[in-house]
Image 1 (cartoon, helix red, strand yellow):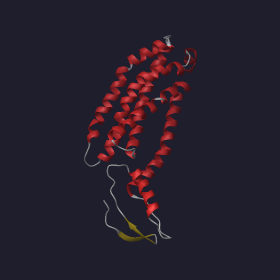
Image 2: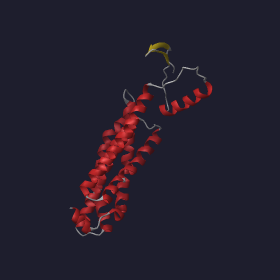
Image 3: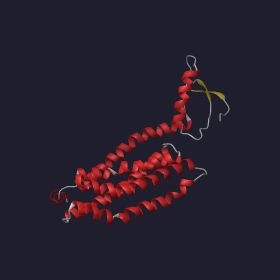
Amino acid sequence: MVGPRQITRENNQRFITIQTNVRDRDIGSFVAEADAAIAQQVDLPPGYFLKWGGQFELQQQANKRLMIVVPITLALVFLMLFVNFGSLRNALLIMLNIPLALVGGIVALWLSGQSLSVPASVGFIALFGIALENGLVLVSYLNELVKDGVSIAEASVRAACARLRAVIMTAVTTALGLFPLLFATGTGSEVQRPLATVVVGGLVTATILTLLVIPALYHWFADKPADMSESH
């Protein structure tokens, strides 16, 4: 839907603003398609240029900030895990929870027909925190069992069973708190729904895969008992 056109002046330049509402698709693909169509069909006279603003401009600015903030945050988290465990392999194993959670969030967005927006990106950040916490709890218990002389194979099974309730309760309580936002339709739903969809969908895969994949991979990422006793 195109709004009224007005010619105004700003910074000694005249410009005309054309407003449009994008529905049933993401803004990024709409702008890319519109740019391609304008480039093919519209021949702008010398001195004329086209600039996209509004929500698209805000989205681009937010994405640029997230591209800086997210890697720095993950690097700091990895450093904290390394300092806590004194083991590079343990820290890497816990960080594997991030792609495990990422799969569920992306699939949830795809199934719900939503696109990757700024609220969804924020949801991924929250999801990563929960997934890393579950991995931290599981790996800590695995290390304790191995340090006490339990074999790695037996420790993997015992840790997954013992921490099953804690990991599931963390996921269920968080999902129940966000569940009403999945069906939000009023003001603010464009922010609430993508965020809740990513977190709830990611928790499903992160919870299942954390209890299955992390114990299975622990054999390759575990420190020897002697090394663990020295690090503690």
